[in-house]
Image (cartoon, rainbow, N blue to C red; front, side, top):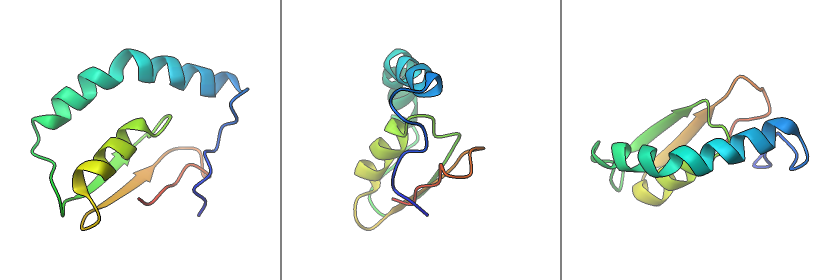
Length: 80
């Protein structure tokens, strides 16, 4: 397990994920905000992309909660 992101900043996939993040994170956070994610919850992010949503969930659940992520790329596993 590594907390280093699996795509380098120069890869096309990284650039694509950054563009998607910029376009859709606000909507995703607004929708997830309606799910009552709160301190102590355990969350799973499938297909984490550039990890911004997983990081947002980690802030919401705080130290008493957990966020696990899964991606098709085997090095893209983060447990926050």
